[in-house]
Length: 354
Image (cartoon, rainbow, N blue to C red; front, side, top):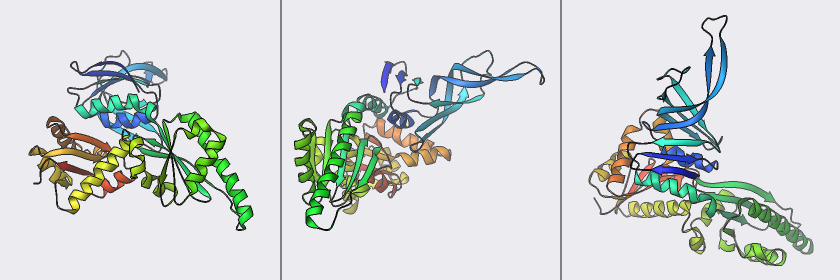
């Protein structure tokens, strides 16, 4: 994301979308009641009578008063809908319109008040492309590759090598498998340009692969950090996000921060300590200014928006922001978000036990 112009006192921010991941950020930044301006296509009726009239599609600069924000991780789409506020010759003011936000879209977002966490998300989105982390989890004959994202991680590919039972052939096949893994690491390194590559495995497989990387690509080896996990696939990747070995790599990454804070909340809940969960309980804690960290899963926001029941949650987030609480909008795409869903989608670390 690029910030083209920003004036928080005047309430507006002019941004350009530069990646699909920016759509996730915007889905939690744009609220009901915001004014969003962008170039958008609109069907316009030309001609006064039924026989002579025709429909034309025009691209116009439209401002809408936001009523609905719909984001889909699976189709990578963001739709912002509401009533038209801007004046147009052929478009009636007050009619409904949907802006489809895509990569390279330019938006102007006007708010009555920008919350601290929304401004932090904007800055984070601008830095996100510079902090990619590539993850590879493997065992004797399977490997999974993922890129860490702000809304969790994206599994890039999974491969399986055929390993013979006979020892001599096994070693030969295993060596070929490692070369295949290295080729994919090189491709993803070129594509994503990650700062770090985390390679994790049970037993000695990660060390063996690291030796092969050292022999084949010394520059790639400089980015590699080794970690331990007990499985491949999503389970292995979720394990990696919790490992002590990679804290130095992931300490600036949002998914790691989210995992850490939710684990801390679970510990506090287990010992009946300084934490609470559920909308009613968190609302009470926020009103007492007792919330130190507020976490909300994005799927709860989407659900309440679709049911037109978002106002209460929105007021909780705004009050938490006013009382200087740290706020995280967590994706349900990774393990931490799924655990938060199990707590009702909202939880808080408290300044003191209540």
